Length: 452
Image (tube, rainbow, N blue to C red; front, top):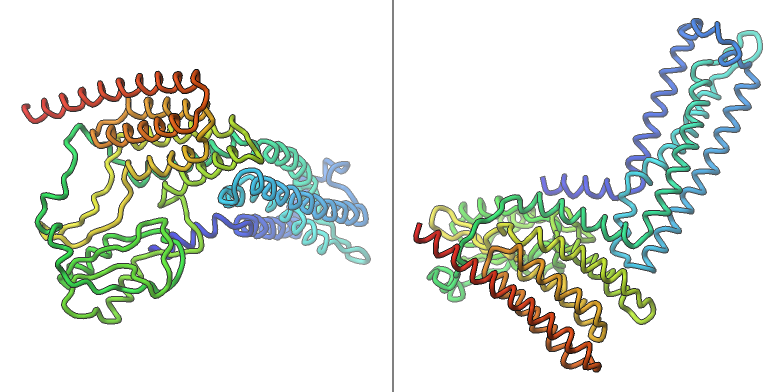
């Protein structure tokens, strides 16, 4: 299943798959219409001779013109696509190139022009003159219709390219894809509850005292997917504990530990192969199973916008706004536990995402890149206020307070103007008070749930 998911994601990210399907459909379409003409199905169209009554030479010339035009337009389309890719890579970040390549509009446009070209070639090949002339009138007429459709597609594609390279469109697209991934991977919302305390579990405390045998990775690459059900089943079968050494999105080097097993003997080859099969490792990260990669893309765009060579504060502000929307969506989600059990027996210790880790992923590097930009620091403070108002975990509040403390340190160290520093300190104080009120409210709700 992991290989199928990885294979399907690679197909979606390529320029060739959807255009190939469109070309294949065009071939089938041409053959069917030609067969209709051979069977005499065009005779009912004889009442419109000015539309369908074109001769063999006229039909061949028209199809030849359409075919050559479609090839020229397809070349222009490729050039525009490559130009957009180069511009997006240099202006924003190369990490978003796969988003452009996965664009259905681009793929359909390329497939449409290639399909019309192949269609015209097939129909033109069937035209005969001489003693037994044959002109597939229906097929020729629909080639004319397809040409009009190709013109409409070209106009829409130009509009799409013009809008898709705008910063707001790119950021919103990445944020939408990340939110969809969050809804799929973290569908459950949690209620008011106390924070987990893993230190009270004697099994967890005794893990370091065990003998761990590392299982090496078979390949190098980024972890795109982990099948924890398979890991749990293997741990149950060999009566041990599986500890993952890398989480989704991390890079693993071949022959370095992928997981470790709590055994008194080295694992056999079948066990090693089965554990490797539970992982999907590819050449790049994917948002589908790794929302942190979506956050990473937006952070990269913000850092690029704040670089001295670009200095685009407005784009960085948009990045912070969309990062805020992502973190708000994560604020009430139930994150998976790092521990998997067989009954009450611990079987898997996994590296899983957490709200605190994703919050640091979203804002730490931006804060480091904008030490003297008052507008960005103020926007981040407002972002923490918005996120804090939506969270329902005390641990989340603590993480937000830590972020505020980091911003205060940056402001005191780097902001020289007293007015700007005083404005940031005032805003920091207001947000701290709001987080404190939210913390008191959450504590009261948790206590009421226990008393109830």
